[in-house]
Image (tube, rainbow, N blue to C red):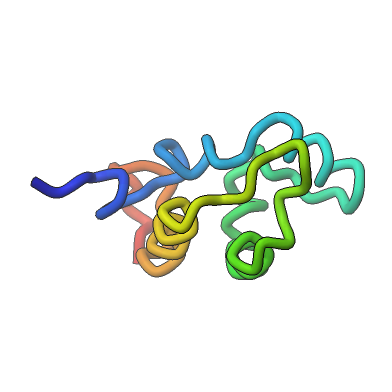
Length: 91
């Protein structure tokens, strides 16, 4: 049985949950990047993937992303960064 969170990840589930309040507040204060905002994350998805997959982010006390989280985020990028399963703008 396939897992929709892995096969068709969306911003609503599980991508938004990858960014905790510490990460959101840190990135807002350091460079104004709002990781709680769908459009911001979508527009910066490749750069975000690059830093989390390299292990440079997130910073402590947050845990580094697991390989599964990285894979799911990359899949989200590949399928057009849908906001929800009903997002008709997925390309």
